[in-house]
Length: 54
Image 1 (cartoon, rainbow, N blue to C red):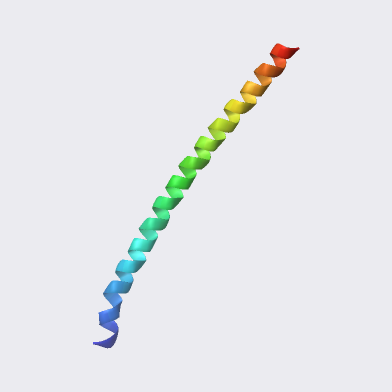
Image 2 (image 1 turned 60 degrees about the horizontal axis):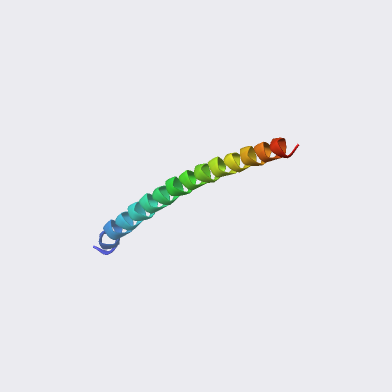
């Protein structure tokens, strides 16, 4: 009865940890994509500004 009592809580804890990590990872990848879009827009803005100043 010693090991079985610890097994279920450990498995549940592991599942919660994995699900948490996956959700954090998906949020981070979304954030990175947003940052890339913002960066691209800024570069386009800089190019337009350079062209107009010439």
